Length: 382
Image (cartoon, rainbow, N blue to C red):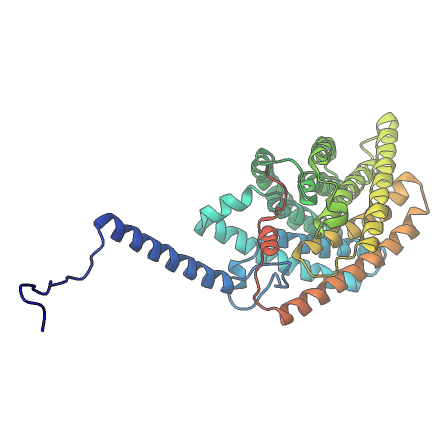
């Protein structure tokens, strides 16, 4: 019973105003999207520092980062080195593997170009996109040595078509304190010079031999531009692509050695090319010593897809020594190249083992580092 004269007040459930309700629905929707995106990210295969293979299980072809092209470059240049030292059977095995990887990456590249233009444009801005050009030229160089000149010429044309657009896109997005992958602007350009010089010698195309120095000189200029922007702290803290700082000089030395061997260049031009070959090779060996010392003092044993960008310079330095020995008349470069080649082979096998181990241990664990590897970045964009 209530007090006389007082009536119970009827209450109605509280209804938020229109603005509050809209804000509540927006927050709820954002939370749901965030949850969904995290769930998708947890399933997305990423070539990673977190232990995920560049070939991770079902649907892996949809998640290959541009940095995976370094694996093709590494295996292909080791195939070149093994061919130069007479280990033909093992060289052909490496060639078959690099060719298969190249086909996979070419299919992924085409699928992104035709079906996912947003992702294609985003990744084309990163230096790692130039592995498409570099891998194509290194593979073409090995195919030319095998005698497949038509296939090598087709790869040269393909690389030459891809190169200018990717190069301009990458250079427009350069920043301060770039990682070692920035030197791919030089590697891709020198790759064109190497393949052009090799095809010129095989097919007796003097016009190719005369065109190659243009790419070679441009490659040296691009190296200087990348060096100015390189973050030298990467030497002691880089995830693997910092080795490209030396590898770019190695492929420059390889290009110069092929031009030195060309009968098109005689007299003072030949002397200048020989001197340039030895200078570039000497600088690349100095980088090799510095980077190896830093690796020993600051070990980074964890697998990262960018470690393939370590194997490539190791193999390229060996190939440059082997290639330069005869045209420069410096005989001791050949035994040095043989020693460096087996170091590169060991590094390749170790990286393969680390890849398999990381994939079996952590089959799907994306991380911030892995996302940077997928973008081929890691630089300070300030």
